[in-house]
Length: 315
Image 1 (cartoon, rainbow, N blue to C red):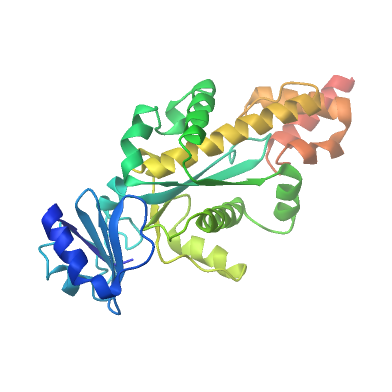
Image 2 (image 1 turned 135 degrees about the horizontal axis):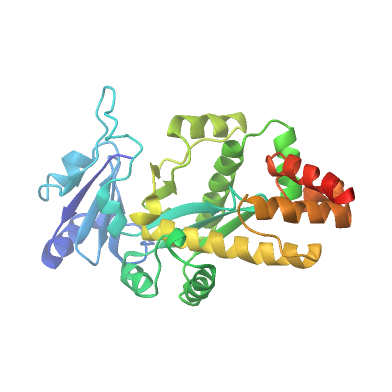
């Protein structure tokens, strides 16, 4: 999405608000002073002094008030490898935005969980103080504790879970894990958007596939990419909203792994290591191979390794 960003004083923003009075929206995003909708573009002014211009003529409108601190108009021609047209503007990280991330994709046991969260600009610092950061840098007990704090802060989020039985059905139908993740992220954002009274200024997806591949997956299910979507690798290191999504997704994955362990009657290890092969062999011995569908992503190589171990156990 093309946009320009200005940093203005309170008096300038008050002047803008009066100027755009005929075009003001009834509802404003959290943390915003006002929002206006013009035929040529949309304008959102925040209490912090940042003013966001989005739409076809954002540059022209923004230039009436000053020189943009950030301009992300898409240029014609082939983008450079370091300048993707799908990359978010750096200004988005410090303003209100949504972000999504997933957990469980590399684990043999357990579901895939995807969470999408919306963080207001005025909540960013408090979330950092609560310990929100990339979930990969946190232990599971820390993740559970921070996830509870996120809930206490009433951060809007959505959670979508692909359980193992459904995962295995889709995989046998020819769905790649990339397509599964695409539809989970897509549905998580749509689910979150229904909880909000306005469309987020931007949605950052922790990139697991090239944007064009992501769009092709959507097209096969008669869906299309949202206009405010951006892709970024290691996005949880830049976006607090993605970091929140990462923690919520990981927390949900851990909870479901604990439930599956209780149902199995044994501790199901995370990951896809030799310990996982041993646990899977034990599960086959206890419940039968057909029961793996309820607990595992059975197309992983761990299944064949577990079956070999099971045969050894029988001798």
